[in-house]
Amino acid sequence: MRLTPADEALLSLLREDARASTAQIARRLGLSRTTVQSRIERLQRSGVIAGYTVRVADDFERDRIRALILLTVLPKQMPAVVAALRAMPEVRSLQSVSGPWDLVAVAVVPTIGEMDELTDRIGAVPGVERTTSSLVLSTKFER
Image 1: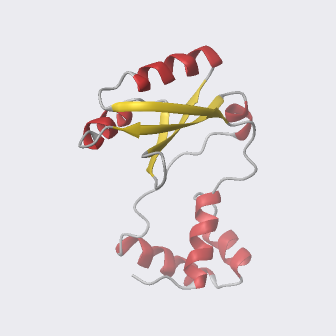
Image 2: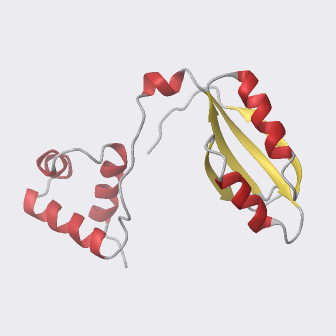
């Protein structure tokens, strides 16, 4: 499905606040409420919008430790490593990337000690050859 610039703007607003009313979204986009509602329904029917999720308050997240963990994975071990990381609730997302690393994980935990323990667990996953971690100091914006 090809998205229009209005569809992209709508998706961006929904990423910010999926609970915003259709009227609020319509005002921000300069479209009618009916148009916004029909676009949302069309995006849902076509599978572009697959569901909605919870965003935790910035105040709560600000007190947590967030890190980017870069991983090198042994050949043919990718599916097992991905499955192991998916089973760790502290790992919020996992991307396959080009370059010297194979995967980048975003991890969130309450304390530095728990981040230390998590990075050790990740490094011990069979198939993980090497990890490097960087703590996130602040998030400028997130969609």
